[in-house]
Amino acid sequence: MSNYIEYNDTIAFHPGYYIKELVDESGLTQEDFAKRLDTTPKNLSLLIRGEQSLSIDIAMKLSRMIGTSVGYWLNLQNSYDALRAEFRSQEELQEERKVFDSLDYKYFKEHFGLPDLPRKTNEQIKQIREFLNVATLSVLTRRDMAVSFRSSTEGLTQVNTIKANAMVQIAVNKALKIDAPRFNKAKFEEAAAYALTLTRNHEEFYPLIRDAFHKAGVIFVILPNLLGSRINGATKKVGNNVMLMVNDRRLYADSFWFTLFHEIGHIMNGDYGISFEKESGEQEDAADQYAENALIPLECYREFVGRNCFDLQAIRDFAEQIDRDPGIVLGRLQNDGFVPFDDWTLKPLRHKYKVK
Image (tube, rainbow, N blue to C red; front, top):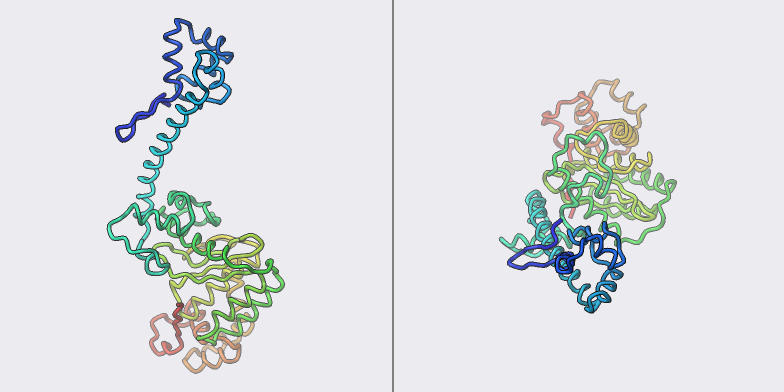
């Protein structure tokens, strides 16, 4: 570390710069000067090189030794620290610009009301920083920033990480503003069972589920997808509550309900984190299994598959039997390879939600 800083045509000298001048003018060795100053040679050397901040104790000793005020020395240290902080802030802004390039300001403007600031990158960075409530956008590059990234996500790019963290940060901030009872797993199990009765209620299911989860201490958030985040959903403990977030990347009935119950499965298993598309591993497999069995009871599904009849009416009849949206059954059959994804005759079974 240097004992002076140059930035924007301004120079700030560390107090050690002036202490070195005093030592040189005294004709003493650093060791002898340190003894007169009542400090150690090592401490004096660190100060002279600018590697240690000037303490009030040393400022007091210098003022007594050469007849200056304590404030004179402390002001030198404060001026040096202030310019160094400004310099670091500008360096940080350059790093933030790299992170900002991975985000989409239009996403924040359209969905969360951030002001229109065309070509004003620094102002846009400031707006996103304050909206996400972070000191610097650079924190979004960390895999442990908000929610655990599971070991099977090593292949994610930094852009994926930045966007995923941004979405989770939005969801957490929303959850922090909501007052809810302490998380109660037994009540949440009841709320999840209640949610299963709403899969055919296409118009009103969201507020009903949200309220039921809220009573169990789970704050349910649906966010517009940030392209490139690769997130399906996320769960996180927030104080005495649990935040459960899904996005609207795929809002067909089958994918929405599967994603929701996949995240519910993570909560039931006490496993919190982000769920990414095409993620694998024991925790993901366990959550998948929970979602499959919750949405379509295993024995009922096996019996239906055994009939080997998957036309429009058969699927509708089975969905009616188990009180589920037909799209959920269709999605399961497609995923298991019983029905091709491009069978247009089954298209009427698919329902797409629109979350406002």
